[in-house]
Every structure is written in C-alpha cells, then in structure tokens.
Length: 150
Image (cartoon, rainbow, N blue to C red; front, side, top):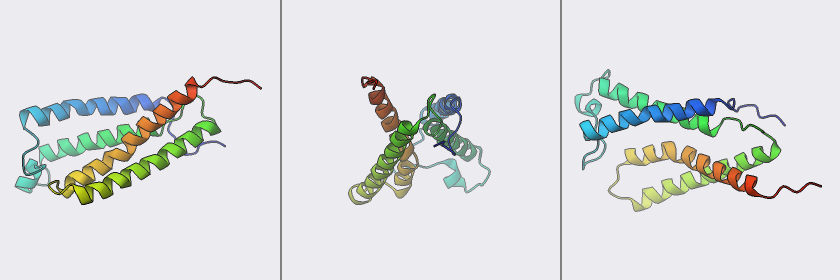
C-alpha cells in the first residue's frame, strides 16, 4: 500500500525552518509589546479595528508558519515508509484526536477564567504537537526492538 497524501521526506526540514522562523516573532511580541495582559490576548487589531494592521498581519503570518511547519513535520514520509509505519502513524493520529477532544472538554468544564480564544488556540496546535511527539516516540521504541529474522 502506498501512502497517497504524505509530503516528501525532505519537507520535514522545511517544517522545522517554518517553526524556527516563528521564534523571532514570539520574542518580539513577548519582550517588546508584552503580548499578554491580565484580561487575555489583546492585539492592536482588536483595539483599533483596523483590517490591515501590521501587528495583525505579523501575528497571522507567524501562526500560519507554525501550522504549516507542524503539518510538514507531522505528515512527511519516513525514509522507509512501509505498512508498519503507516499503522503506527494511524494509531498516533487516533491518539492525538482523543487527546485533543479530552483537552477541549476538560478546558470547557474546568478552566473558568480562560477565554474561549485561548482554548481554541490550544486546540489549533495540540493535536499536531501531540501527534508528532507520540509518533516520534513510537518510532523510537519500534527501532529499539531487536529485529528477529525468520
């Protein structure tokens, strides 16, 4: 069985580059603008209601870079993509969806002071991050098993 919708193996490097490109934006927002306040996430876009605000464009571009980077890392082929790897990928994706909805339901019931925008931001990245971590962990464990030849 050949995977149909996976990115080439080399695209994982581009994914890491996209995530690393986000770091200067995060530092800029945290240090220079104190990106968070006690009320919740506030940007100049929300305060000025200007559609073409440079701060909003910078934030949207950074978030898009992180999402693209996580997608490229999560769904790029392995060097050897066989049916065992595909099964591990499918299991990890299933666990990531379970984890995502568990976090969503728990945050809706137990986090009272958190705004819904933060919950949605968490659910935007949590499934991809959990999938990447779990899939890499399962691959690591799978590669450590002694290979028996029959």
